[in-house]
Image (cartoon, rainbow, N blue to C red):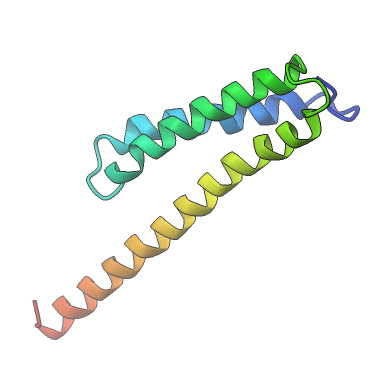
Amino acid sequence: MDSGGRPDGPAVFVILAVAPLVLARAFRADSRWSRLRRYSLVTGALTFALLLVFGVELINGWNGLVQRVLILVPLVWLAVLGAHLMEIAGAGRAAHARSATGNA
């Protein structure tokens, strides 16, 4: 796999594949995040598969497209996590405001 001369390139992609798998395990225990568990598992597995396809140039002539999808999949996952975190934070602030005013 060509990492553009950077020795840390492959490590970044491995971390982007491992992170969703690690967090999926944590999401199982937290009801606020449990709906993202399956999505995280699929993202991690798909990222690993794309990393393998890209690394061994399995699809001759299509490696550029594979590379872009390989980058896109975990970045979309990060965006979904960020949006969900904002949703949770907003719900927490609203509940706190209701309890502060006595409107439970």
